[in-house]
Image (tube, rainbow, N blue to C red; front, top):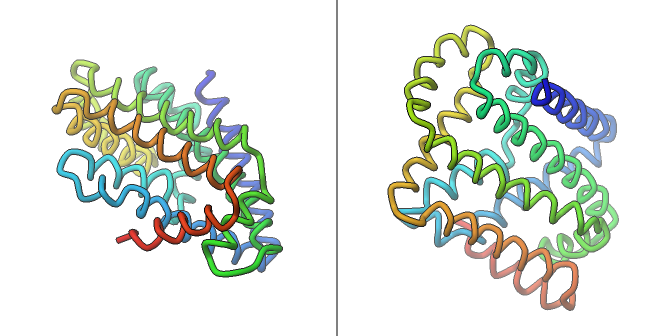
Length: 244
């Protein structure tokens, strides 16, 4: 029941973050601003991949499912309600991937909340304020852990595509999963499978994509933590200007 326990703990962490943000209107508003800005930042950082025939689907999947500003409450509610059922309804490999997703989501929400708190006591235009909030929030080890977890999730999804018969099994699970209240999780798994299966048709594409995410996110994190504020601000402004 390792996957079920992991999912329950992660969802509880996310619920605590939501309660905290919901109890303070200014903090909740700042959290929304931060999420929208981070979504634009990701779109700008990977503008070239979002236009690429090979990598567009992967970049869009990461943007929508991991770095986006959308409300994941429905998926979280399903996770919390049927954490134990995931291990009964889905193969072990899928349960582990679902647990990895839950952990990524929980850490991301916690870091976003810390950034929102720092945003409230920072000032300036968006690039300067974001950079200042990033440095004030700190937590460099957690940022590295978040990035590692995102890349690991990508590798997990890629490995699932190499499991014989799994795509057919996922398709057959669609109706039972929906009946069990797992529609949002089912959509994530099918979308992730199809996205990475499509990339895997080109030799080395998945590895190149995940290596690019690792390199660019690490570069930006190092820049925000260690470069002169003016340098970081200029780079953020350039990235945001590239967002489609």
